[in-house]
Amino acid sequence: MIQKTMYLLGVFVLSSCSKTTSNSTDSNQGPQSPEATAEWQLIFEENFDDPSLANWNPWNAGAFNNEIQLYRSAQLSTDNGILTIAAERMAIEGPTNPFDNTPKDFEYVSGRIESKSLYGPSNVAGHRSYRFTARIKLPKGNGMWPAFWSYGNEWPTNGEIDILEARGNRPMEFQSNIFYGTQPGVPLTMDAVTAKLHEMNVDLTEDYHEYEAIWTENQLRIIFDNEIIHTYHANPQNYIRALFGKKHRIVLNVAVGGVFFNNTNTNDFADDATMQIDWVRVYRQ
Image (cartoon, rainbow, N blue to C red; front, side, top):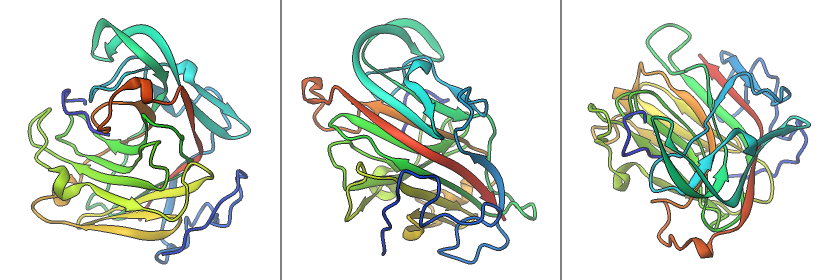
């Protein structure tokens, strides 16, 4: 979920809406594949049973990337352990972004939350690998840009990892990506090298699926429903080694429009859509 203009910025298992799924495991061990996980330690678990979202900071402003939504807390709701982020067409005025209170007109409202705690691997024993995972049902509809990702301030000097970002009009694919730079607001990474499109054989908007990244010093593995679908091996172009030792907050949001879409005619966008999140977990070893 790029923020280029501000320095803060193969088996697929269908899951039910229940908290208990065919992919679920003992919460103290973490997922059982793609590797032995006896040493994984669960350090954060959000089941969205608390409607106050006490572990998260919601945005109440616009964003970047030519997006057209105003983020506000009213678009976030929890019910029966499910977080719903609702995007809907609405003409509204609000702050340009959290760092610029200049009033701006928006065409949509939506929601975004960021974890209050930060996570990331380092050379400290028990912290050399981190695992971010979430169970999500994606929104359907042209113009919808859901994402599950992480980043650290000042962007992109502490990096960004896009575990999942998708286009609502392409329900059978999602993308992962990496951003890093040594100066605020200036990424050195290039989409042609780091952006990876993952084509699935299932409609991701019809049911819940698990999206995951395992982050280590020399690799970043992208996992879908407990199957590794791509491994980024550290090289001078993806800057994975430069990310090691950085700390990230976890982000869940639904943007609307923006640079992720070729056709930005908002008349062609869906009027509303929802992203639903069953849980979010972080492990380390």
